[in-house]
Length: 369
Ligand SMILES: *Cc1c(COP(=O)(O)O)cnc(C)c1O
Image (cartoon, rainbow, N blue to C red; front, side):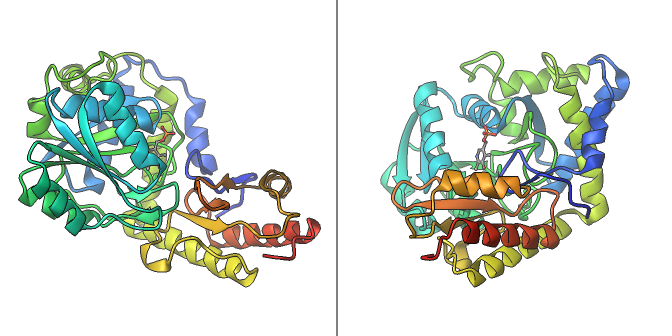
């Protein structure tokens, strides 16, 4: 894998391959048959990743990932529904905020940022409140990198006859999710994360019967996934201007995904990136925030050095000058920074990043780590 500078060690946008970027050098008309075929092929390939072709529709949507999350909640939760939102970080809080803004009734259950939500928690919460119709969960909470136990939670939700909405934005494509084994009404992801496309579109795998019943739920014309799907099924075209270059880049990124070996290979590379990072940073004395057992191989949160000579902004700029973009921490209680393991980068890239970080700490005379 060639190293193109700068390397974005962030959870999206992230480093893409030259081949993916090259796919954006062509202009497509939205009426062009070939473009519509590109969209259809994209949706088919995406559905195959979750083995969802029989049970789910793939509904793509223009915008960043949050647009697709908001569209999924607005479309699939009826106006008189109630959402139980499971929170252990910033993206979980965003789910609750979306329910609030859309005027959907909701309750929240929050655990500490290093504490996964458990199936037993969800069991108790569903027993205690019959009004809940939907449960919303973040699979990998990107604000720390923590992995929530999706299969176990999905089983509890299904056993109670409730519906599950999964924000799998930062895990889809790298961590296995099989729609034949994990019941869900909606699973949401986007172009610019583990599939290594460029940002600009999200997509929702919506259970076919749930989507069929969702006419008129949406609060918004542009965010109505029912309408988006109905129009696309009828015409083969996107409703409203499609992000043509983003679609072309994602299509090309998916070809490379398959060539690499699909999900198992993508997962193996990211797991290797993550381990390389943890080992290298550990040797510098930098401690990760999460215990290994609940750390997803997506992004790692590190405790900031204690030394008063450490300032994130200065650290960030110096590491950037060496070709690597880091990510600030997102925790309220502890001073941290984050390093992504995803994108078109392999172990050598991670080793080079650790070397750059070691040099920068030395330059800054940060001794107390
Ligand atoms: C990236 C991400 C999103 C979407 O964020 P956008 O900035 O709207 O792209 C949502 N949920 C999770 C868990 C994410 O990692």
